[in-house]
Image (cartoon, helix red, strand yellow):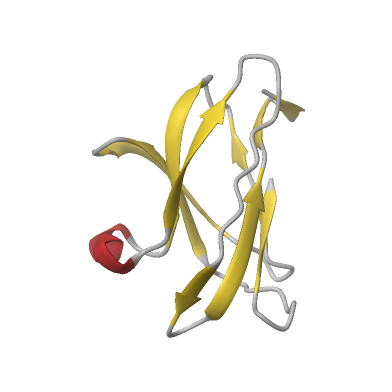
Length: 102
């Protein structure tokens, strides 16, 4: 779970959020924020992943950060970025499996 907000704390709707390992884009998970800027990834196995904003095609300019998902808990990742289209955003997320934190 997480949320994407603009610099004035307004929700950023329809922002693409990606979860992937290394350069394995074929097994990546992608979701979009809802009208409240919220997003979630489900059924994510414990491991270390990259979380990014934006399209994979423009990864060179995207914001991304590493996150480790523990076997028994929730992983949260926060971003601060300066993106021309959306301004600075803050992203936090938690990884869940079956509706429960992993």
